[in-house]
Image (tube, rainbow, N blue to C red; front, side, top):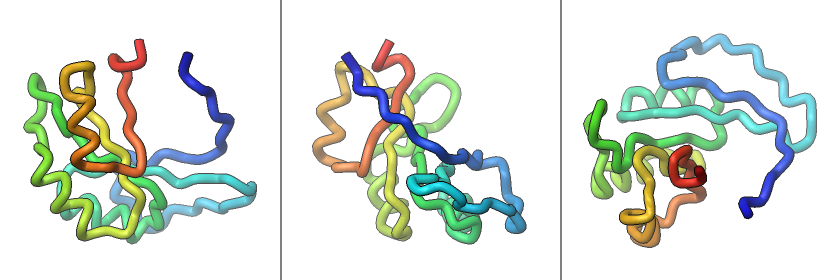
Length: 112
């Protein structure tokens, strides 16, 4: 059974490019999460003071170009944000996360 963690925070999507966000960290443990798919989006998320970033899609193949492991590692090197792997993670490729060693990973279908 998956462990549930009670957390407070806000998610800023990769499409949100607003640099004047008014996010107050009013609670202990409040997290600011964001997502990015390329260098430009990572730089915007840094300006938005994102703490943890979903880098995606790592393995997804159907609708988006996947990052692949090499592109993922390259993007992770350019930022100090904690990285969370996202996109297409399944039983066949989850062991590849041992190569990447992300701060965390997320997946909808993997946990269903």
